Image (cartoon, rainbow, N blue to C red; front, side):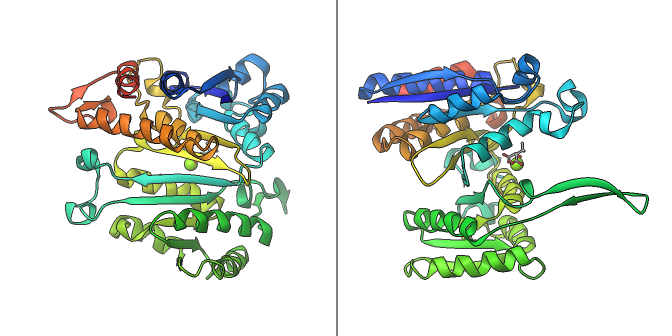
Length: 360
Ligand code: IPM
Ligand code: MG
């Protein structure tokens, strides 16, 4: 089968880590008899440099026509880059928000998983981490505060800024359905996170999620307030299977969850809609401080490519081959700098890519 993949290397370490994922995909294609064709587009700072905007309509059109998109990372140092001396809609991150919205990618799946081999990197006490961490954060991605009306104006002579948090019941229902579906393939528990003690949008969220849960009698539903969820993530992360939450809460909690595993360089993510199309990217950012040094960890991007094979192309066996190849590289002691501990074999970005490719 032929699969058309649009690549967005992006900024910072993006191009380096995407190159390693392509290497691995090529070797999966060869072994299992698939053809992956790749087309690169610009998004983020590199597109600003070239075209004066973070994502051109032409580039967006190419992404729309693909079967799936693999993204590295976009953006630079916020305080210290020419890309941020412009209006918000022209900054690198605006490209990311535009592609999410224009492609209708409402469901952001962010796994947070503690690898046995990397247990030492977990910042929690052993009595907590030994219970394991294996959760998926299901973050709504095209609504809420990120896309509500916003403005900055003078009211009574005071600079005043407004952002609005809007959800309708359909937006909540479709992401809840995804969360219950995924929970059904896992440990069958959904924790829906909201701020229903304060926000109307959260009260609607809670009641729609409850309605959806009626069709999933074998899945446990628990509601949790977001401030409590932030605490529980460090107190007892093993309790979570699928966390379902709105855009902004999901942005914050997914960073917390990934940090708790101690290895953000390992965590993949998928942004999906109702059909098979998806955008896949590592959970970490563009790390401009280490860009171009061949030391970044390519594993999150390689694992994102595995998610692409599974969710967009239904190639489960092939996805597993990648995941096993990564696990073997870890078992054999290979580590990039971010996950290195004394006694491990320290490798570069390209070496790690070669090792995983060799394990396919
Ligand atoms: C993320 C990032 C983005 C977000 C930024 C870069 C706009 O933090 O993917 O989590 O807030 O969604
Ligand atoms: Mg974020």
